[in-house]
Length: 233
Image 1 (cartoon, rainbow, N blue to C red):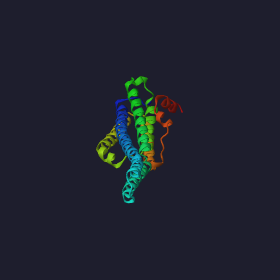
Image 2 (image 1 turned 90 degrees about the vertical axis):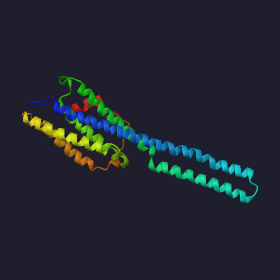
Image 3 (image 1 turned 30 degrees about the vertical axis):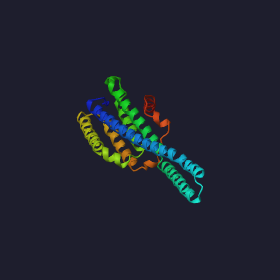
Image 4 (image 1 turned 120 degrees about the vertical axis):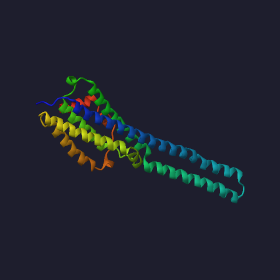
């Protein structure tokens, strides 16, 4: 019997939509926070950097005694040192790059979320075949989750309850879907799809996420044209 769209499958896909929406929100917050840090340190460096030269010039103009010059020269040296430290902090933490990576991840989660919304808005007879779409959406979500930059610990703690609740909800709906399909003597396509994705997820969770890079091409991976292309392969 051919697998068809039903409320159980729609419920599972809707849960993926909610997960995508949550991670989109988290990545946006992280991105905003990183850009704020970058802007703050850069503004401080911009202000302090010319002050060291200004202090030196003022000292040369006003001071006639060597003892007085020591004060101005020391102040200029301290300001120059602070500028160097701030620039080093910016380069070491890569606030702008990290902010961009999280911003890119939020765009991709948004694209995936919108794709699900558009698909569920269609009538069941007008949608992509459920077996193909379910397989694609699970793979796309897992690929996106594993390729996204690591979340800072403070944001994980902040949203841990919501993430855990959505994971439990997803697992519960998986079980309900399995029971429904087997009870109605439908083929095992759905079970196979979920089992494959579970194995993929286990492998991807232990992957070193720090090696993942986000390119501009990745930002359009989840649009409709790419989805249709992948389904045809």
